[in-house]
Image 1 (cartoon, rainbow, N blue to C red):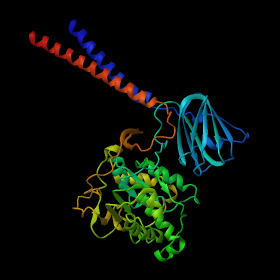
Image 2 (cartoon, one colour; image 1 turned 120 degrees about the vertical axis):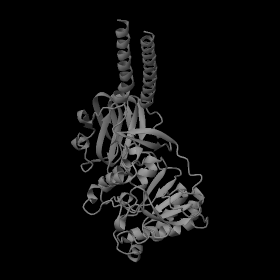
Image 3 (spheres, helix red, strand yellow; image 1 turned 45 degrees about the vertical axis):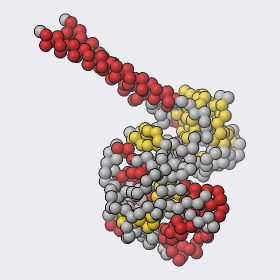
Length: 453
């Protein structure tokens, strides 16, 4: 009878410890998506159904000082707004709390509401709004993009020409170095796609998929097509474009820069122009006489290592087939494919390749101040003191990534629900461990009694 009683206690303790450990992780973390049940009204009484259809191709023109009111059946703890163009500053009001938003110019913006209410109002600038999402307290779904500001400095500066080049030609770099290693990878585009309003959304969705959390820099140069370097030079103010690249280097002070193929991969003249100017920029960035305005603002900087895609000298081939723990065992190549898949408008023309003439694994060390590579396939070889990333582990859906903490969010009064959840989880784990230890002690006692008999 005593033995059966002890076994029952053991089973009960194991069950309780399992529930205490697993319940907070599986339930308390997840925010509820309130979007489909929202009631939206507008100060000008216009139809708002396009704002909750979860499609950035449908949108509504907002006038300055338009007020959008959201009502839900439970308190709204977070909003996710998708604009057609980066908005001017706007405000969100929850009860007596006023939140200043739009200060970073993010196209996709997450707003944490420190005083959750069932009714929230948004006073908008003249803007085009695509989507509005609302959530209860808890960890937001993986598709919600909570961007950090661009870095003050970075470990690696990636310089694609167009949205999608970052996956097609530099595919494994972002998931491996940003996602797996937690390095500060900053992406800066030579051209913009505001003339094709769906492509900036694809750009952000692709970066988010592969673990980039610092908002990208998107230039003022419009996307223009060219099939030769000489022709591309006639399309742009090349001195202004070179000044842009020199300023990027001085601003972000990267240990490593990665640029395009000298021949423009498939011969694109603006790809060629990007690298043609980069070759000059890495020499000028350390010279205070070159573009003195950015030298005065950021100081000068000499980049330790500069790589070019498909460069034939000092060749480096990345291993992009190694499983990455940050992406649940998926490889850097698989993540590059997933990132490019977000560029839905480009699927019929391109694909991510790890062989052939566009091989996204192959780079060459164009310039170095720290010596030649030994062949181990690491862009950061010989970099003794890279910029240290301030990291925290963040859960994104079923992925664990390393999120680099840069500048604090403009809203310093964010609710502490996630911190509280972590505290509860930690307490539950501690209780679970104690209970399991107690169960182990009971098992030992039962075993000793059997031996004595």
